[in-house]
Length: 137
Image 1 (cartoon, rainbow, N blue to C red):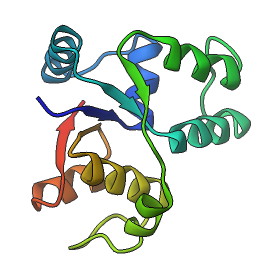
Image 2 (cartoon, rainbow, N blue to C red):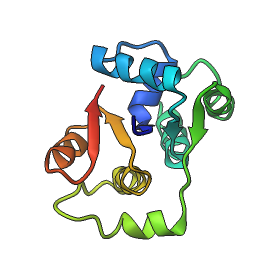
Image 3 (cartoon, one colour):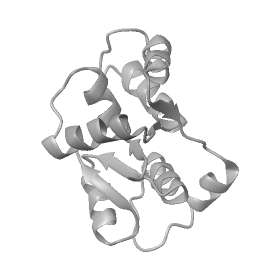
Image 4 (tube, one colour):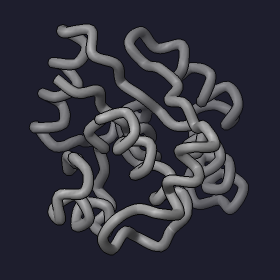
């Protein structure tokens, strides 16, 4: 099984006990069972900070503590955000989404051979084009 990279919404829904698709729950359970990493990108920390600062979401803790809890969860790992990944996000093949954070997540998933777990329609459409593995949550 390939690693699962959780997009920002997937992380929020998972850790705030919001409903996820049955296929996603099965994939996450299988990852835990098989010791397959669940990955979260540093760009997710940035997006969470923006969402909270613009009052678009409220969390059960401050963004700093909330993200630290995510990383302290067994099986959860921080994905690398190397200069190579950041540069690759500017040169994604096909017709990737325009959102820079989405592009970084896509480049990260491609670099790590991970499946990107998301509800973002543009990311899912990009996955359908065969450029990256995606899983709708």
